[in-house]
Image (tube, rainbow, N blue to C red):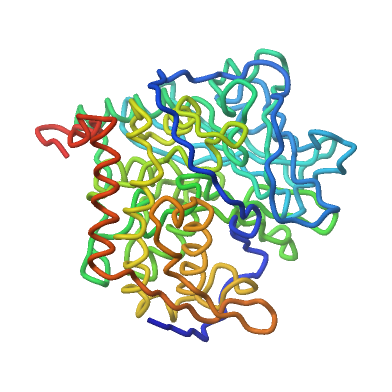
Amino acid sequence: MFIQSDRSTGVSSSYRYKEQRHRRLVQSVLIGTSILLLLTLIGTGVVVFSPRTGSHAATTNMNCTLVVPNGALTAQGLATPYQLMATNPADGPCNEANANQTAFVQGVIYDTATGLFSVYNPLVIDAGTTPLVMPTPPTLPVTAVVSLWTGFNGVNLTLQGAQAATLQAAGCVNGVAASIFGQFSYCNAITFFQQVKQGIANGLVMPPALGMASDGKPCPSTHDFRVIDQDQSDNTTTKYIVNANGQTAQFSAANQALFPNATILNHPSDNGLLDGFVDPSLNCQAWTAPDLVNNNTPAPALPFNEIQAAMFQQTPIALVPLTDPMTLNNANPDLVKTNAYRAGVDQPAAMTVADANGTTYCANFLNTGIPRIQTDAPFTANFASPAPAAANSLFTLLANRAMQSYTNLNCQALLNVPNPVAVQMDGNGVVIGATITMPQPTVMQQVMATAQAALKSTNPAYSQPAPRYFPPKQKF
């Protein structure tokens, strides 16, 4: 099926998607032994790691370090700007105003007494500079649980504490041992999600249902195979503003009014794509909470996406696999690192490599995710593209993203099925059309049988998925 789109307006071309930042093949090598979950809290110094490859200009340093302030989970810590600098200054500087190097921090506050949430996104500035507008500390209830997630437009973002004990005190996880995730990290997320689960069990927290989309099917979540890409459930919905001198400020109507010529720094994340584009195109709504920086304006956030997905996503459920580029360790699958990543986005740990194998993941992506992108084309082909310089509509962007993810997850080799997506570009390299050719039913039957056989052969309990949430009087 070929679909061509001519919708190309609505969003600044500075909104880039990560497939443009790191396109790389992923080897599928499954480890044959079970590994217990071990989260590595990175408490001191800079993590040593092997650089990840990526597509970027040779003059741009894609490996940066983010300095986390002391007391990161306190009101004062939230209002203290994080500082961005080069991990290796010899590779060139890192500047927050550079759209290829921008780092983002998302903060969410959960009040265990009321069950209410709020959003406060800390600011990132260049090391040694001052912010355009100094953040104001929020007023936090004594029963608040604060969690933080970071994202990055480059390749590798290493967390470094302002002092030796800063990261450990905040429960920050940047990866495992000498292998960081890359663009993603989190602080205190495990405790945060545990407290939210308790609130759900007590009837204090009632996440909204996903709802019904315009296509007559449930609205998508971050665990939906039509939404995932090569590294699902990563990054934030945070935005900043920046002036011509490179000074940044938190995103708010008040700050925009003070600096009407400032540019918005967007984070091209899975969460931002879902909340800001896919959901609206299907008449779905993101779960939001008051943004304390922006006069309590409703704002989406990463943990809302993940909690909602954990509760309501129907099978098949997409969970971070061993073949996710961010969970590879020196280009090899690592169950410990995969589970460390999952813990930061409220996903159940994989007990064996079979629970997170890339073959089953690719099979579900091919069987349910890519066809849904095709059937939703009547709604997405005429919806604005998040990145007009890359694709001229939401449909063409999603199709191109699926094509690249199928390659980068090594699905063709794992399934022995060619990439079903082909795209058409104009003279400027903008994707203007896509052809999706699904395998014959007999081929798909074999693909699914192979995926199930892989699960059965190494995990006899494959038919009993790990428990997720258990709300009052109802299991889901």
